Length: 76
Image 1 (tube, rainbow, N blue to C red):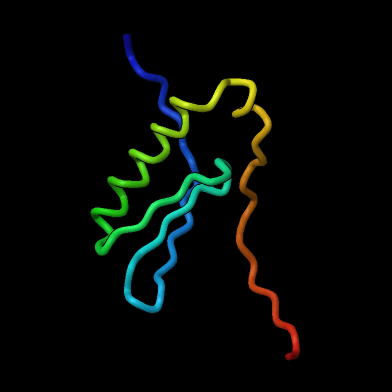
Image 2: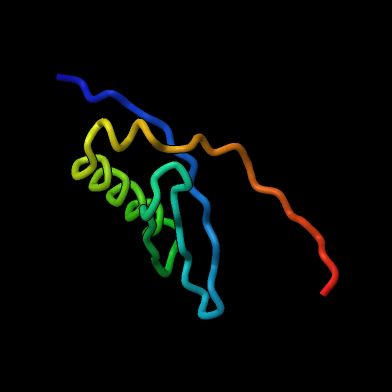
């Protein structure tokens, strides 16, 4: 049986130690980290698959759709 393919938005950041951190806004709590972007890509795919395995269909229907990222400037 063929798998249904779904697409998710992945936000990638880099911390002060050079570690890449990936998170999926549509799936609360779904995130991982790695030293390289290639490793990060594989790890976030695994994290998404695991998230979908352990989360019920009803819980997945509650997610918010990712709209975008915006920078906001404020005085400090």
